[in-house]
Amino acid sequence: MVDVVCPFCQNTGLELRGESVSGFAFELPIVRCSACGAPFSVLQAADLAQALNQQGEQIRQLTAVVKDVYRQLSDIEGRIRQVSPQRVAS
Ligand SMILES: [Zn+2]
Image (cartoon, rainbow, N blue to C red; front, top):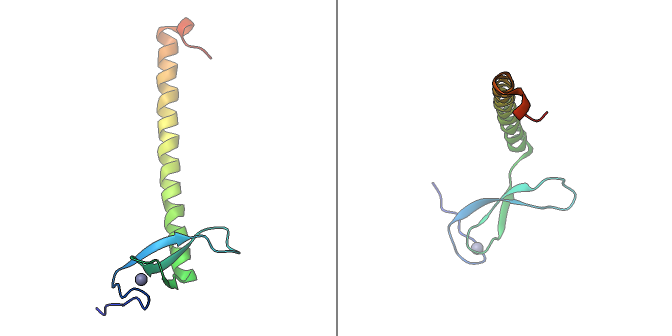
């Protein structure tokens, strides 16, 4: 692996950070110097598409979990109503 040397501060560390860029609704992932923040590159559209696909899959998984939790809470509420209907507000 080749070390990338920052031309501004001679640091060799890089980091990935989301930055607001005029004209874009979302932050763009920018590879930059970890010491001074000088930008080196912006990840390509294919990388962004992959990231969006991964986020979409995570949202689908979380939606399924939330629906399951909601179903379980509704079931618990129904059981509580059977035991003590006057104590459960509707
Ligand atoms: Zn630097």
